[in-house]
Amino acid sequence: MGNTTTNLLELKGVCMTYGHVRALDDINMSIAQGEWRAIMGPSGSGKSTLMNIVGCMNRPSQGAVILGGEDISTLNAAALTRIRRDKIGLIFQQFHLVSYLTALENVMMAQYYHSMADEKEAREALGRVGLSDRAKHLPSQLSGGEQQRVCIARALINYPMLILADEPTGNLDRSNEKLVLDIFHQLHREGSTIIMVTHSSEVASHAERITTLEHGRILESTH
Image 1 (cartoon, helix red, strand yellow):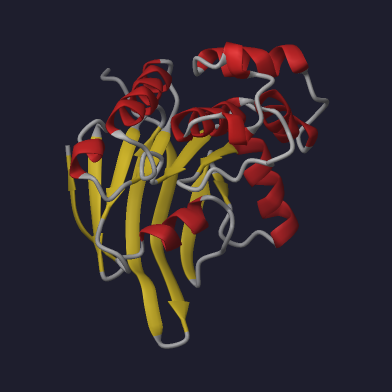
Image 2 (spheres, helix red, strand yellow):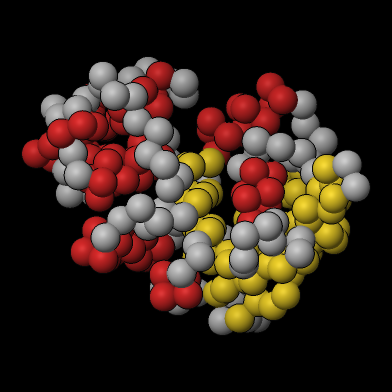
């Protein structure tokens, strides 16, 4: 008997229509448990629409989205919020940190929506991204790379089933880009499932597989 691969995420015939514009057109895609997938494509190709659907911020016009065995494509807004909170870690190009909270408090804030805040756990999350000594700093006292690593710690705090990263290195210089990608490699080695949208073929090359979108359709998937 060979090893069987379990799919964490499956998109089946997913379409997204805005008026007469079809932002996604019959998307069929599977992401295996523990896979690191990069999504590429030019502006307007449907990358952000796809991330919004997978990230439970929107529902498709058609098709099924199955996450961890559950079809999330027909759920109401409250149910989608619950899944996003409990099962998905979101990392954005814009850091979305609260300016008057410290790095530690920004990480702990994610816990409030899930369970009781745990300072020890939040400190450990900052330690994982190399920021133990910056816990009491405000975002304005942190570099762009440090702010992005706070965002990663915040995304990891509730042990998500799936990590979604939208242009996670888009605002970073080369050295900070490497630090962030090193963290992603470590998460991948530990078994995390990562979907990363990027415009950079160099950043995408770190993933196991690259899926390219064009005009709302999958152009190709390469290993």
